[in-house]
Each structure stands twice: as C-alpha cells, then as structure tokens.
Image (cartoon, rainbow, N blue to C red; front, side):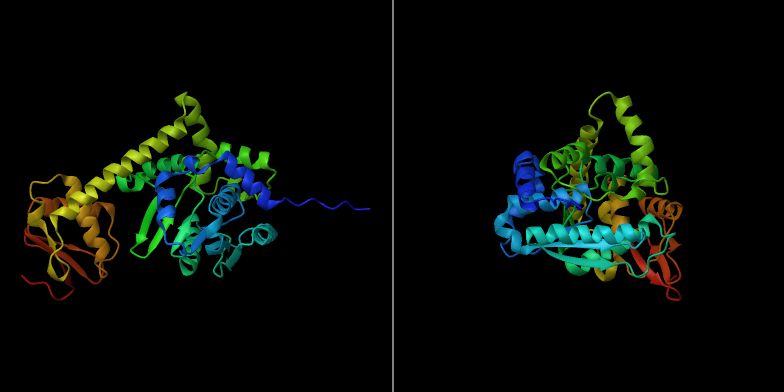
Length: 340
C-alpha cells in the first residue's frame, strides 16, 4: 500500500516562523510603511516558491492577520525549466490555498531558452506591475552583497550601490518593499526547516550562466572567508549609509530648482556646486526627456564636462535631436530646429 505524503500545515508553519522572526527583526522602514498604510491597501507579494519569497509570504500572513484579505501572491512562470516551472506554480497554488490567499499566476509568452537575465527580469516585473501597485519582495542580506558586487563591476554610483532598498518608490503611484533585508539567507533557511516547511529550488541557480549566480557561487564565499568578519552585515550597513548619502544629494538637488520652462535645465543654478550635483541633474534631465535616445558613458561624460565648463555646445542624443546649451541653459533641440 502506497503511503501518503504528509503535506505541510502552512498556518502552523507561518506562526512558528513569525516567532523566530518577530516584527522587530524585520526592516523598520518597511514595517513602518506597512503600519501606516490604509487598512484596505492591496498588497502584491512576489512569490516564486523559493525559500525567501515563501518566508516573506508566511511572515506577512502571520504578523498582520487583519490584512490577509488584501494579500495577493503573484507567481510568474518564465517557462524556461519545463516541468520544474509547472511544479513551482503548483506548489505556490497549494501554499496559497492552505493560507486562504488569492494567487495570481502569469506566464512568459515570449520565453526563449537563450533569454538573458535582464529580459526575464523585465518580463517578470511587467507582470507584477499589471497586478499590484504595492509590491513586496523577499530580498535578504545575501542579495544586498551580491547586488553590490555586481554594480561595482558596472561602475555604479551611490544610487545603484544603495540597492536593493527597503522602501523603493518606483513612480508616484507604485512602491516596492523589502522587509527581509536585515535577515541572512542561512537564518531564513534554518528557520523554515525548523518550522517544517518545504520550498522549491531553482536548479538554474546552480549554473554559471548569469552574473549573479557566478558571484553567489564563486565570489561571495571567498569574500566572506577573506573578510574574517560578518561581511554580509557589513555590506548591509554600507548599503544603508549609501542610501542616506544618495537621499541627501537628491534633496540638495531638489532645493536648487534646476528644471526650467519647456523641459530645459537651468545650469546657472548649479554654478559652484560639486560635480555630483551636475551629474545627477544631467541624469534626471535625460531621463525626463522622452525624445532623448540612449547615450554611451563616454558621450555622457563629454556632455557633463561641457555643461559644467559653461561651454556652448551641442551633443547628439540619438536620431531625434541634440542637447544644446549656451552655457546657461540646457535644452533639447529636434533635428532640423537648432538655432545658431
């Protein structure tokens, strides 16, 4: 006679996990936002079925019972792992059914076996954005260190190195929250096992195709060993300090009121200010100009030097036009409409 496999008692597991990770151990900024949110605010929880997203869902369910009806678990099937991907989705359905949480599932229609990590992430985030304005992610301390090492390799500034943030406004009407950032992966896995939980493992994480996987497997363990201290906590502390510095620079730039009429940038208001403010002002102006195409890092640095030096100049911003300055104001000039 075939024995039945005993399935986890998810409400009991959630309660035990919440005892191991009380609210005080979660990120205070994310918790403060949650506590202040209107009672009927709907939450979308990114739920892959892995250990981190499972822990997040269980903790939100256990710590805030009055808000359970507003919980929506969002599962995105990338369709890159065949039967394993389908099994992930089925696991998520079982967990949500046991907790009484609505599960919204999506699939990647444009999936390709050679899809890049960035393409998969973009498809996943687009799905999340269609179903939730307030989205919770299960990123934890290990993710902070991995992201920091990845962004150092790309030459990121404070804004990039301060990621992932516990409370991250995406647009005025969208927000990402990450309450597990104070916790390390090993602690989450240990607590889940002790509570009797099971979860899904993505075997693609064991490969070396993606940069994050290579850093996680080949770099991070040696870095932690070489540090001979809690390097993950150190990276988390650095991330927090970088976020504080980044917010301070953003506030300083806001106080200068550099945006001008008709999408211009008032360069005279940046005179005598540190280059970091010029750089941020130019980044903002380019991001907010819908006709500007992508420009290379070399082209950006050349334009930055020109406006900081107060020189009359024009720089190509793609097929639609140019960045033109008289030394006092920077404006976008469409092709064929440059005043001389």
